[in-house]
Length: 187
Length: 383
Image 1 (cartoon, rainbow over the protein chains, first blue to last red):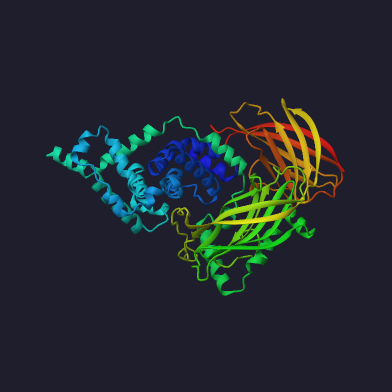
Image 2 (image 1 turned 180 degrees about the vertical axis):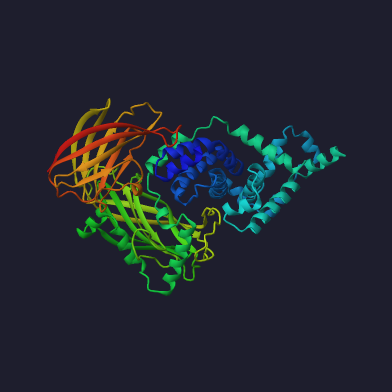
């Protein structure tokens, strides 16, 4: 109810409504953007811009719907654009598939030596293109369905499905030693 | 490792990097205030399912019948507001014909104007031939700066793509649009003869869904409308141009009036051919817990009355609808600019500016307002 009041207030042009929405969603939004951009400052910039864009486009928003999913999906979309435009990410984006494949996957011994599982996953995510990384974040961090993801990534559900499939496949390959280790320990 | 672990690890990584104490509001508020502008696309992109149906119908009609070319529509958009109409009639608008094409999309800067209150640009956007009829082009991220790097913030704007909901019987052709934007010129130093400016923008393409025609007489609830997001972005489009500058005249009022325990100061009034603007300052009555805005009304020597309250331009209407008014906050400080968007420079004599009340919005209580009744009355002579 408070959220609907805030949106109604924002639709009337009252910026106080935006403040309430910022306080409610800023943390989750920046976390989402950070997982995609891998850059805290860029994530904050992206979310700030996304709130301002939401403010501009609030007239298009159906106040009967929850604001959170709509906004967080747009943040993910903006984060992909931001990281694609960012010069700091050019090396990742311009690297050929062959270059990435040539990057040696961590072997079991290396993984055993890795003290931080999170770091390993983080590194693996970093080797995905931003759009595939966004697909992983939307699916596994925000828990969206493929249909929900498609509505905000501005692409057909089939494209999202392909991105998610490609991202999963690559993640599995990059994390193969971990998956293997988990399977082995489960027996 | 199971995929479920990915979820948990992503949460751990995110929580480790971004704490719950994050507070972006001060930065967002500063940006919102510097870019404070109307939700203009709400005017041209329908917000309801009925709106989409109307738009689709209007587009079909536009394809098969006579439609205005883009340039005449720009003239109509220009005349939507009294201030712009006035400067056009006075011959103060400079005509340009600067075009740029990127990815098949052409932006043409056609009209410019500048005075001490605002800088106005009028431009058209056209898509490539054969653009599907469900595509709409909207400019985005418009930035105006001068040779010194000063960026002029947004003030107000209008635009048309598809049928207008303000101008009757005006509709652009599919893939075309016309826009007039005003930027705050308060940052211009002195009274230069001309301003050397740079306008940069992107153009976003939106897909407008074609709804299934409703069955006559049958109400069908089809659920909420999906949000509309751009499918592509072209640009940047960059225009360098010079425009004559009209300084108008500034009156240093420096009057302070107290009401309801709050001292309100009228610092100055700037009168130009396109806009009349007063600069007001007051300290927030309740610290920083509430977002305070003044509600003002103007009475000119000619007896005309204009009123303005807090809020965006398109939510504010005047007693005389031909001249719109607005209130903006200037930066982070407790100062506001209160404007009448019309040429009032021929009304010499005593004017009155009245702050009728101060309205505070409590962000912790959405919908709640605190109102401190005025009035604070300022009188000043306009030569």
